[in-house]
Image (tube, rainbow, N blue to C red):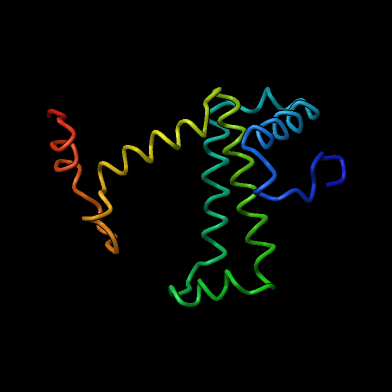
Length: 139
């Protein structure tokens, strides 16, 4: 899209704030703020995430890795991921949430919930009751 500033800039040169501003401008230029309610954006985010899943539907783990590396599929997958990111950024804009701060807070929580020494190489989730007890939660 030639009217989007910074086209061609990669992750290393683009901040989350840059991307949020790009989405904010894109939405404003089309007068779409009226449609960008948290409910609509959350639903759209889920729909787009399902489209990412569709790229890998019915594939086993090895096939999904090959699909992700296959040049014929990489751009369509990237486009679906970009759709997810666009809606995620729009939702963060609509709710005025700081995604970087939220992610860092969540990683701190997850580091406590899933200590690397205990969970390295494991995929099991800790039962909610165990995790709650360890954090001192009641109920």
